[in-house]
Length: 130
Image (tube, rainbow, N blue to C red):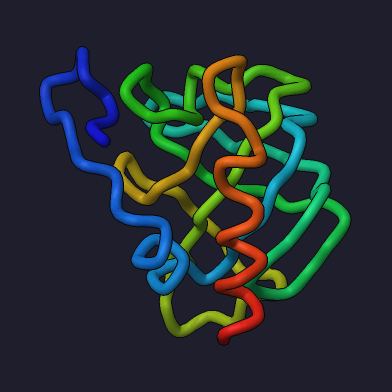
């Protein structure tokens, strides 16, 4: 599927298996805060479910601050989001490290047309395989 269709640089979202393999942390959470700055947004999530990485009750992730990112300016408090995050500095450990998302990392905001049932069974399977 293509994401960011109205943007200058549309991208193809990776297959779920590839997105999972490339991510440092894969979780489903509810947005509790979205702090905007000039080019990024700092999103705070209450973690509802985690498939990969260290669990924590609250996780902060940096997203691009524009409408082309499924998060960024589009994320509102209360939104449920599936996040494929990577470390900002790959040498860091996940716990306490800064995490970020990208335009084409596979992160998805769940809305009426995108449902958990489309993703959770496959993520359960992938997390058992690792």
